[in-house]
Image (tube, rainbow over all chains, first blue to last red; front, side):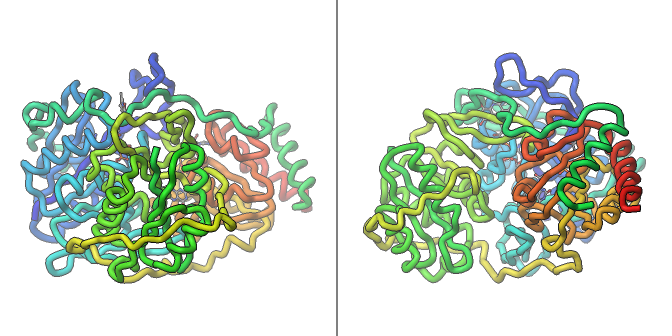
Length: 260
Length: 314
Ligand SMILES: Cc1cc2nc3c(=O)[nH]c(=O)nc-3n(C[C@@H](O)[C@H](O)[C@H](O)COP(=O)(O)OP(=O)(O)OC[C@H]3O[C@@H](n4cnc5c(N)ncnc54)[C@H](O)[C@@H]3O)c2cc1C
Ligand SMILES: Cc1cc2nc3c(=O)[nH]c(=O)nc-3n(C[C@H](O)[C@H](O)[C@H](O)COP(=O)(O)OP(=O)(O)OC[C@H]3O[C@@H](n4cnc5c(N)ncnc54)[C@H](O)[C@@H]3O)c2cc1C
């Protein structure tokens, strides 16, 4: 079985976010990046299939040079190979553009199973996975919290609202967009990190993949016109002062609410 | 502008969120038609209550959500109605099918919009820390709308649009619904607690819950809760989780500690009578729903507060 895992590198969850010069994204200089949290669960789910038997795990990511760090981490965790689509032409792509580029990679790799995250921690679009599945003419399922291989397909659980679950049977090949918490994600071992140094990362351009016309700002159907802090609502009254003063303020409020 | 509203059935009734789509459609402006998948009687109801001319896709194979069948039904309704804009709620059904439909239509896709002004849609990015205004330049646009974004329109007395059965040839269903079930219930019922003290990823590691969060909850005679990453990491079982995929709570007092305030957490606790937030980031979105806030290190504030509460109890 061959598994393709789509990984996005995103600003670190604790990074300071400042809006960039033209107000359309954040300033990326000087901040740390990490693998999108949902995608670490997707990779782990793929590695578990590999651990259980025969599977090759290929990771793919689209993004600038810094992304090779995320791919090295994935290889250190146990992925076999990586594909890095690195091309300035991708800048300003919308979700469909990203999906087109990932679809081109998938067509070269011919995976039986594609794992993605449910959502990116930066764009929060939850759009790429179902689009990619459509382009590959595969069925898909999102917010998946359990996978089990059965006959010619998978039996999966999708998370609904309020903790309810939906059991679905899905044919292979298919795309599974993983919800966080589906598994406990491993760390790369020292041995894994050493081994990763010898594993290949194939660099590709949009032209290599034949998608130059389908990606980038020119092809995008959706443009971000502006990024800004959310409007300030009825913002909380902020207690100031020493710790003692703050605690006195909190205590006073708790008493006033009749809870003490 | 010609809009297609895709209503959703949940537990035998049209969801409230579907009536919110009608409000969203009214804000965009244009002629509204609707699609109800899975139940012809509910299609008539939606048509009567503001859905306008309504397509019903009532094939038995659509009684439960499945991606191939629903995508085919929506695409057929887009074709039949000639709609240029498709609205669907950002629910487990909507987020699963909508981007796929958008790709099939070569449409612009706007995910989880909660506002629209002059053709620009507003959506949250970076887990609630920033907003993006986006615009579609494509001939067709698919928009998934955040539940609760706008008050629902329920035009009870509208008189109603006509209901038409959608001509539809279903493809092979490659993802098949088997059943739904509730996740294994644990022993924690947060809905009865007067006070809930919740810890988030900012609490940092599992040992800190019994050391820092639980003592405050106990001192206040309340219950402990958590955000999703805490549960995902296995620090606490799922029964402690507050939010859209956990419990929805409305205590007299909710104290959010080291929780940023992503929308999926907020929907689970914003109905609380009073909210206090403790977070080191002054820009954390949680301060927009809290009434009282402390910007600072939780490891300094919370133990001091616990001591003070314990002392006040005597
Ligand atoms: C400088 C800049 C400008 C931008 N301009 C625009 C714009 O004008 N219009 C617009 O719509 N968007 C724009 N974007 C955002 C756009 O590129 C999004 O990344 C895209 O819309 C996908 O949405 P998402 O990242 O939220 O992914 P989601 O759909 O939330 O991602 C879900 C999953 O898909 C996979 N995935 C997503 N992205 C990648 C990737 N790069 N590599 C590998 N796997 C991936 C991952 O498994 C991920 O978990 C811009 C981004 C940047 C950095
Ligand atoms: C379909 C779906 C369903 C979801 N369901 C839920 C749900 O039911 N419940 C839920 O909670 N989430 C849910 N989420 C996840 C949600 O999007 C957020 O990722 C999550 O709520 C973030 O949790 P957090 O605030 O604890 O973590 P973060 O967003 O990482 O915030 C941590 C906060 O801690 C603060 N902090 C760090 N250190 C300190 C310190 N020493 N002192 C004070 N403050 C500190 C930081 O400033 C930060 O604001 C769902 C997501 C999806 C896509």
